[in-house]
Length: 626
Ligand SMILES: [Cu+2]
Image 1: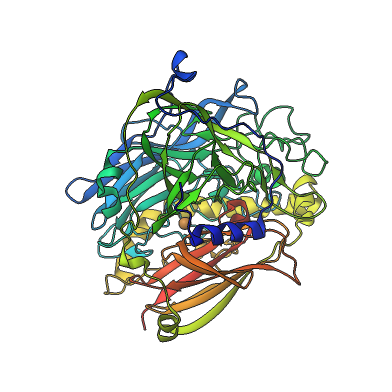
Image 2 (image 1 turned 90 degrees about the vertical axis):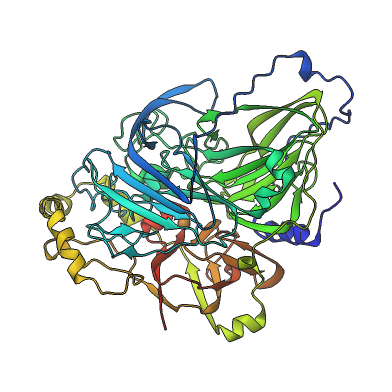
């Protein structure tokens, strides 16, 4: 493959700014051609690549009911043969019970996606906010977010029962309550919406990490012109939801926080062991030597069987809440044509990087990509995540290389080709020039990611003092107030429509019922960036932490132009890897431009390391009409 372009090179340099590489396993490359007999054909290779059910819009509409509940199953640990019984939060749909992933929802520009979310999780445990003081208040209250989609973020007020857009600024007393509450979401996909992989998951502030780090996620595929190319249409499409659910394993931790084996019930399970349950401790020299094993659509290390010369299109979604992926395919090229859900005219070619610096296709948590693979040599290959250096400092977090899937290429020949460049790209993704930026107001903003110590919070969780006993009383009062609110919720709903203004496109902020106002201890959404509709702005996100992080903003994608102040070949994304190695004096940074197009309303920017978002790395954005 010779069409490596300057775009690809500069992107690799960008990643190198933040991520080093530990030594990889070196495997000699097979150089046999398709016509030769290969070893693989002598062995029975079983294709066991499982995929979530795929639901496609018909006549402009896709209507689905998602149901959140516990899901009891077995999940592999550090060794694929170790099986642990787990009980984790997950989605079912229609009459289908909860499973490893929600269904894949397929739409095109102009379609309407209607999702009714039913919350069948059990009622929330009593408030323990002070002793688990991490905003982890209602682990079983939920909502829904369509990650990356360019859609309306407010509430549609022109119905008796409000219908929700991509609305995620639920206040502390809001959300979709457990034990049977429901909410109707409606996403009107704009006609010119770029085609690519998107992602749905809960985003209720305080419990987003605990729910997403279970199994609550699924894919949304927006299709368009690039999918209609004959070579694309002929290629089999595989969806990869990379998952590493967290759960307690008896005896693995010194401190299991009182959580039963197989369960994920405490935010501290995520914050103390961010890379996953395979860890012994956070601070020893061998820390992070054995990161969380990754499943693909619920299967550990599945086998994909292909024919020689076959082209497939693979859609990658990293549903993990902390661990990056550094994707690499042995002896073959990952030809990337979307970054997150945003297409490019030219392929970014990721060749086998094991002997060439170790920079594969980097996927931050929440990050997505579309690639084409053409398998031109029979044999057995691995899709791997190469080593990733997640932080600098005395005890850097280095995720080890591991094998994600096996690809067996048979000798039988299938002649296929990849589409020629340039690929069709929507005008929505036209570059944002200096002129457009100036004409759009030219406003610049800075966002700072900085972690503060939480030692006092941790000790508060471990030691029950008289003060904490007193707060128990306080919180039992809060709980009663919450119950009262639940009971009067229907009444509140009935009172809501008359309060709303006439303009159907205007966002709605339900006012807080008085009874719970004083207990609204959640500091979410208190910072607010106000943006004028149709503004074009330039933002720089600074990372003052030695650890890498992930910046994500809803509704409008980012046009990335600089890394650490140095211009790069620009590209579009919605989930942005912030380089590691920052300090307060010398933060790392990424600069992007954004068009605030089409939609007014409230939404959020936050760390896609969702435990950080739940701890407060989150701000509200409100777009208002001029
Ligand atoms: Cu999102």
